[in-house]
Length: 90
Image 1 (cartoon, helix red, strand yellow):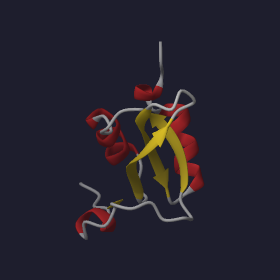
Image 2 (cartoon, one colour):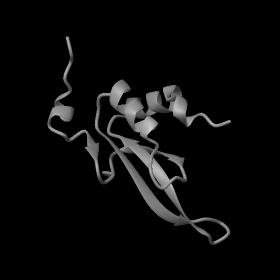
Image 3 (cartoon, helix red, strand yellow):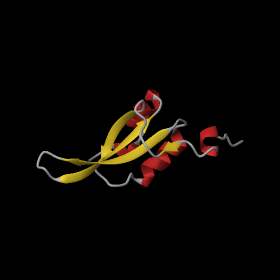
């Protein structure tokens, strides 16, 4: 039997702006979040999340973007950081 998530049915699981109460982590300097990460979040987690990209300036005064992912539940951020295979860097 397929278990439905009410947030998915209402299309309110992925938010467009990061609420201040979300726990967030920087996942890279890409302009867009990797689709693999989004698919992993949708399949493994159940709460609301947000992926945003902010412009910033680094130490050398060069413009770049930083991508952040945030979760409403702190435990989902912890699980994401520990278990998501797409965050591991060589």
